[in-house]
Image 1 (tube, rainbow, N blue to C red):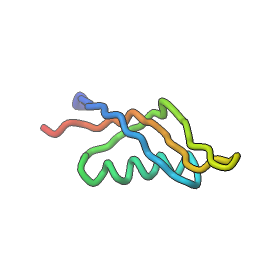
Image 2: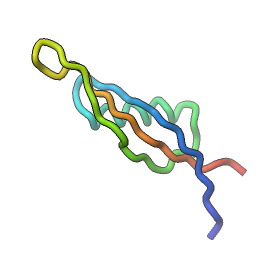
Image 3: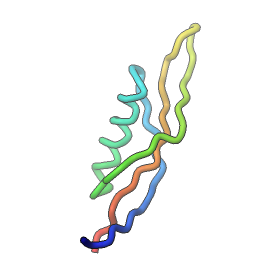
Length: 69
């Protein structure tokens, strides 16, 4: 088994629907330019309130990807 070396970046995804969609939006967008994404960890959840309700979810993630040889 070869050793795995990871680079970690922080991303914040957003969604008007849910925290899950915010996570998926961040990962989908990052995968356009970052390759070999392997894992994520949610580090913060917050949102915007408008007219007494949640308007926008914001989820901050640590995302790990393996470095190319």
